[in-house]
Length: 284
Image 1 (cartoon, helix red, strand yellow):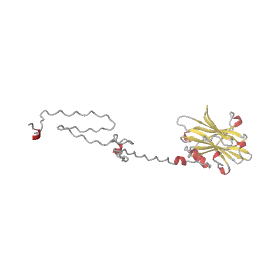
Image 2: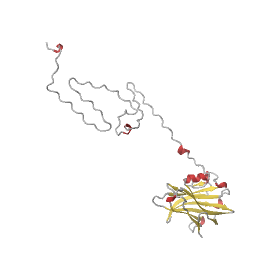
Image 3: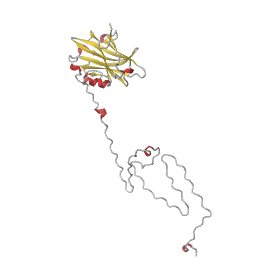
Image 4: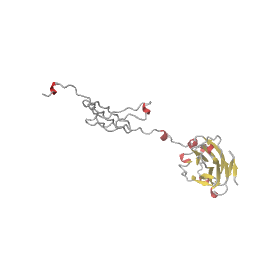
């Protein structure tokens, strides 16, 4: 007979090996759900970090508690924790079965329930069923139920207690050590860029400070800077104007755009005459 449970109720178990199946209805905008288990000793805390069974550690070292692969069933998706209660060490007093959501709170998860089966007849009727409902909707981890010792046997309790701090908050609440320093430590500072070696006869490329914030820093077109890492050619002297004709101004290239052709020099003035020449130029 299946026991339809309410929050806080419990039921004795005859089976010593059980499967706790989390089931929910998937859909657009609904986060994925992961099952996990914590083996608790005296004081309601884990004995070591190995007592945490979840997607990155799906099997307890004893082999007696494990997470099974997710399955798609006509009613939705399932994620399962299997526990051999009869073989567990006497120091294990509870096995907590929890659910965590990925990317959104449990307010978005539909039809979440835990179904407890006898592992010897996992395809038969469940021993107990509990519809898990979040209390605030902000929970990202929920203790769905717990298996606990009572005398020489075991019982199952419907819990439904949520945590807004996700799987990490749930794990640390029961004594799991979570090392988050690796994510918080900054990466190594980049090595300073060596200045280009000087080349004899060629001045080194000038070093430019970072652009200051302001309109110039946001300009679409910036002044061309010397190519980094290569010696720059020495500045060439401006050409001297040819005698008698005005010269066009030198065009400066605009950054990254094709340039218009240079304008042609003006035609010579037909009325132009040379100035009077000195006696050294007069024919004898």
